[in-house]
Length: 177
Image (cartoon, rainbow, N blue to C red; front, side, top):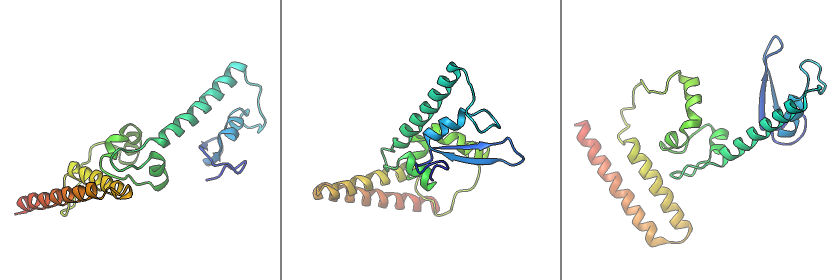
């Protein structure tokens, strides 16, 4: 999404609640600093105190840096970054709920009203979260080994994946009988 004032990418999404209806404003860091320095309702920069201006600029700059740092955070299992999650709206593996827990908890509480799952599980859901995470990690390592042309390592990982899948299938069948 582009800034509404210039062509830079918008990193600040402000919801203005001063009128009869909420108004969303999408701005880049520079335009957000200018916007936040305006006197409410005048559309012109106000005469804020120097301390207030500095505090506000530092706050905006800190928020942008924190967001940039957060976007670079990647899951060690599946490799998805928080930036990819924000753009796609999908996580890469079950471990992401643990890895991005501090960032996801407010979002999950906002959507579902609670952090504990109280619903049903699909009947076809045999594998545990831990084994799914292990399989995702092994597949990622196998793909990396193939990319690096380490074919012996890739074949070892393939065999490990097969053994894990077969043991899960046998274990899953025992529970369904």
